Length: 304
Image (cartoon, one colour):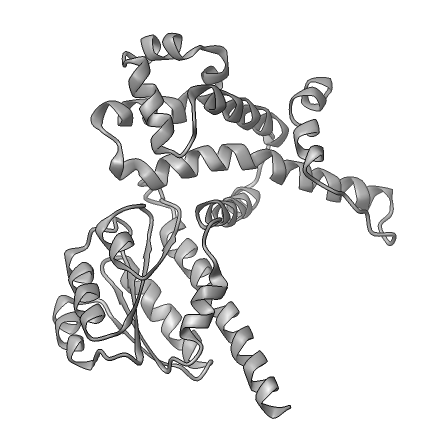
């Protein structure tokens, strides 16, 4: 515990004001504080893995080797200088520096500090006996944390403002994303929005004739490189439709082509994981909750 106090608690408390509700008893207060410290301590680890996942398409073969090694052996990073780590992974120091910069981290030294915080956070969270329910619960919390990390610089209010007067939305998604677009369709209908979804190439091709300035086109692509959706965005722009891209990879064709782009976490190929579907649904939930709130506010103002 003394080591944790030195390593991570000061870093958390320097940026945090903690207020305890007067209705909590001692046990409740301790439980709430423990939960808070666990979640805060996991932030550095989530940030590192999220940054690697969302930029993996831009990594060279050597940088991918670095990423794979670091994810598996993160606990070694704080103990080695850049030259020592480069020798251990069998890459150059300059490649390690480029790897850090591709993740948006200024230097390897800063990356070492992030790794140290991540390791200590893991120590706080590690429990030998966890049930499947607790593991799944933590997975969902991790998804939310990663969503927040990936979209820190994005304003969801802009999404709401741009869609405020829109009456028709087309969703496009191939493969596993076809399930997501169907799920969100009926939820949005409750908001009084005309929604349709397309998950087959033939449907996508025919839907182009319906695009106009009053239509919003939302493309879901995990890789960010689906040529059918990218082409649809090009057609939509010519016809004056607003394009919204949702992908797990930054700086891909769909991410760059869309007028508004948002990121979701990657599942890392786990066959049992539903990260892709869950994170997309959660992101859309946030976006359309903001839109619904704005529409209600406008309706009240019009009545007044």
